[in-house]
Length: 376
Image 1 (cartoon, one colour):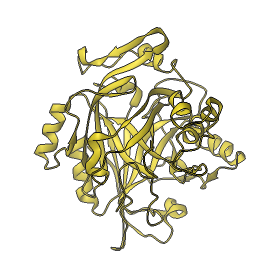
Image 2: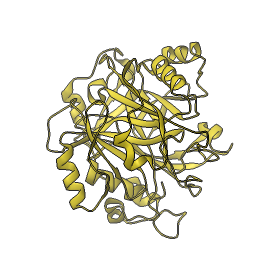
Image 3: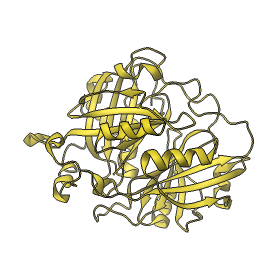
């Protein structure tokens, strides 16, 4: 993105991603493979919605101007087309967003009978607000966290094999061609195959009860003229740059990737600090080159003002954290701290989302983000 403060403020207001896990400024030294062989400075903040679901990491280059896709992103283009957010009452949220004059599509039902609608944020990123029956806690917000993604693929069979064998998306809830509900976003594209894959978590990871089950919707369109969303662009450029999965045991997962012929091509190899959090991270790619990140969390702040941190490296990996302990994460900081000083703006600008990136002459509302979900 080109304005992290603006993005955070918008997602906090409309999607309730207000629990900050970390906020960090650093050089992305290990990602040269995906940044043109160069090391670049970046700013990142990971925010969670404590109603349940995965988080959003809002990511911004500070040493270069992020690039937009070379072609308008279309349904079926290889890469992450949209992120799914869970919703308690689709109609109520749709009416609210409509009253706020947000860019929304009509309410539809997918082949599984779930009501949903799409909303395009001010940064040209597409989100699907969809019915979901899994919630970490009861609360006033009708919108929850990330519960999946819509991913364009060139060969749905190869993609299903990858996500099933590497990430345990073993439940195929639908495999077919029903696409009437997608007319609003499909444009002239004709869908050839559509698959819904669900992972059924064993609730064995520390955060598995917060993250919950997720669904990947794979779309393969007809014809050969498709543009990979990140073709000739770098990791961290504008859009959804990768999908991130929380893993319990990185060494075991690395062995699985090797056995499936999809080895990790980036691996921090040890605990890597991200602001006040720490963990080991690694990457590989799906058959179309869409980046997949894996994170084994080692440390997270629970209540920073009291100096309370959780060291996960000393826990049994299969045991979920108590609910009250995870809820403490939602009691921490709600406002950005580093943005004001790092992007040369006032604290009020950081809070209100009006900060200007030092690389831009004026605010340019684009973002890079990730979804976080779990691999049990």
